[in-house]
View (tube, rainbow, N blue to C red):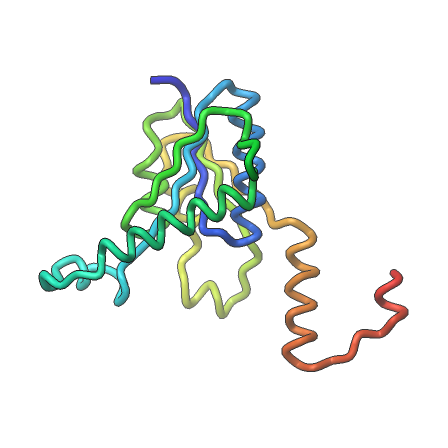
Length: 171
């Protein structure tokens, strides 16, 4: 029962950044790396927990496991993170699943802390804020990669069909 670094993963660029940082922290601490992906059944929260026998849970869980494998492959490829790695696909809300995965105060919880505007903050609660408020161990909130902001800008430009100025590309 050694120390662990628990990291939230969902496959987004921000979570991959957090995953790399968590792997570096695990190497520094001589700890295991636990990658946790939280999933929910279609329809979401509490009401779906008491659904009928014809449940889609096996398919949802299999999709979550596959998404976790894809994220780990995207982050580390064949070489792996260089530390012992455990992947967990957990049914539940992301913040609660991450806090439950932490064993005690010797662990470290790593979460991505992406940019959040007012609209997004109102629609979805922040996983990083939940973890900071409820985790019994230190929490490392990893800011997004600067490339992520550039990628969002390109997507907005493409969505609005704004032509790229060649002078901006060279900057």
